[in-house]
Structure formats: C-alpha cells, structure tokens
Length: 203
Image 1 (cartoon, rainbow, N blue to C red):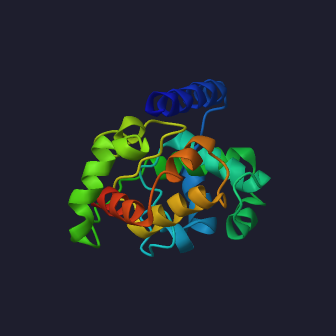
Image 2: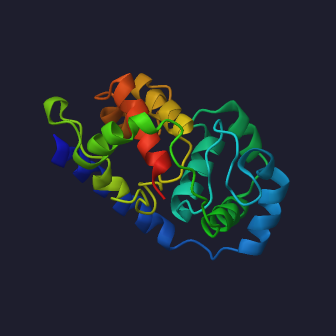
C-alpha cells in the first residue's frame, strides 16, 4: 500500500511537471508588486505569515504555488476567501506571484508544542506500519523541503495550518489531491497533531 501511494504521487508529479515546463517565463518583480497588493495582508510581504491561520509561502515551490492558485480560481480547491483573491488574477499574475514567493527565504519557527516532536518525528520518518501509513518524508523529504509541483515544502510551516489541512483532506473537505486524502484517512487526531508540530520545527 505504501509503494502504491508513493507511485501515485510520482505519476502526478511527472504529469504536472511536464505541463508546467512549456509555460512562459515569469517576472518576479511584477509578482512582488502583485503580492504586496493582494497577498501581503494575510501571507506577509515576504511570505512568512505571522498568523497560523494562513500558510507560509516563502520558499514554497513555484510550481506547487501556481497549481494551488489555479485550483483556488477554478474551484477545485474550495476556499471562499481565496476564490475572491484569485478572481482578478490572470494566469501570468499567478505565475509571477508564485515565482516571487518561491524566491523568498522561509524563517524558522520551532515547534509550538515540543512534547509532540518525538512522536511526530517517528511518524514523519517511518510512518505507521500497523495502519499502512507511509512515511511523510517519502514525498516531502527528510528535511521537509519537498519536491516541486506535487510535494510542497512543509518545513517551518505553521503546525496549526498543517493540522487543519490534514483534517480537511481526511474529511473530504479538501479534494484537490486524492493521494493526500488516502494518507490523511489513515491518521488519528493525535498523529496529525504530532506530525504537524514536527513539520513546524523543521527548518
């Protein structure tokens, strides 16, 4: 089951990567201007969002950010606020904004709850054999830096945000990645919280 999950991730990554490769060049300066006007209030000027409600975008993969913006805009990823934010963005705007945030340096956070670190590390690195839960690092990497397109950077991300997203995948509220839905369904609340805190501590 673990190998099948990882294989499905790889297939999605290859397909999306190939589709992105032929697209126009980006303008980071234009992306910065658009980000300051549209995104900064929630995500911070440099993408290091302060409030844990919002994801930190600094250092996130350009292709992954672009994909999420497209899916917010077309409704594949359901979020009323982001639907409104992306409504006026052109395809070039989304590519430029994604490139700008990808170029920014993520700032270390450290765990909010250090008691969760060891449990989170065990799951992140080794998964849970009893339930068939794959190791998170199989796709997101040992340091949480991920792989472009399908595997986002999770290091130095707000634990509360990660926890909310994993629960949204598990419940079916978030539907834009079927593999993550399968993974999250294997996780208990305690496992989700522990992994989320470990990811926040990674830098």
